[in-house]
Amino acid sequence: MQISHPLTGSMVALITPMHENGDVDFDALEKLVNFHIKSGTKAIVSVGTTGESATLNHDEHIEVMKKTIEYSNGRIPVIAGTGANSTSEAIELTQAAKDMNADACLLVTPYYNKPTQEGLYRHYKKIAESVDIDQILYNVPGRTGVDMSLDTIIRLAEISNIVGVKDATGNLNVAKLLIEKCPKDFILLSGDDGTAIDFILMGGHGGISVTANIVPKTLSEAYEFAMRGNSDKAKEIDLTLSNLHNHLFIESNPIPVKWAAYKMKFCHSGIRLPLTRLSTESQIVLENTLVKLNLI
Image 1 (cartoon, rainbow, N blue to C red):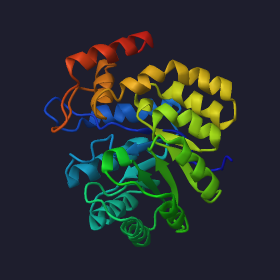
Image 2: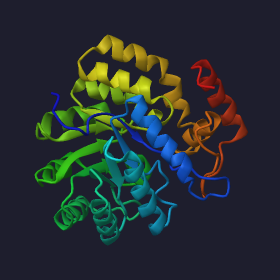
Image 3: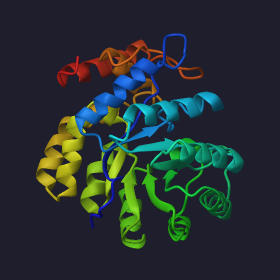
Image 4: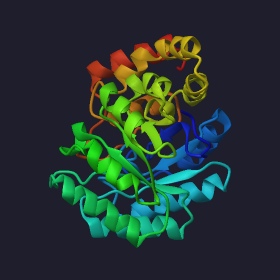
């Protein structure tokens, strides 16, 4: 069931472009924002996990969010990545996002410290009660070490400013249950490029994508077909991107996507330790995919 909401369709988990020395490249960031607006991307996630939130310091995190909102200038919604494994830090980042007029916030589950389901519930409830801005839950157990249960998501969906969830489990059985059990106006977004089209065809409302960094126009078209129920066209387009979906995760995200963006001359090749530049062996694989898609 489709819903009328600006935060649906193809949204990009935007990389944070960096110079070779690791400094944030704000000129490249502005160009990327304009590129996505021209390409039909429906919203930008600023400083999510793909945006290297784990290695930006607090001031940088806020500055990148602020600049992304400034560059967008109201032309495209900006979702600020404000999750943290400290509830107080997440509140502080979420308040900063509200103060700079972000359209919503995306909050990854607290990583490493492995809270219980009750801990997850209280974490998100506290943030929602502390900052009056639309908030999207983000469940990515493969990266965080904690899996938010369906029951916890349903409990949190009762809170008025928790408006949706990004599910990056890649498990379509989970997607099916979310679609069946969550409130009809709760935004259900895929966070797994390989299964996103199926997620949407089942009744999801869009996705927050890594692949969208590289082929935003093509992906946006595929999502639009899927959201209209045109399975054949959506899957036909998505099939052409299947190798790209896979190879953008040939090493830990965002290593491959930043290298692909560099090869496409969107930005420099800067990335921050402990992440490293894409290995020579993986470069060969990803470059072949980019060439076959006429991207380089």
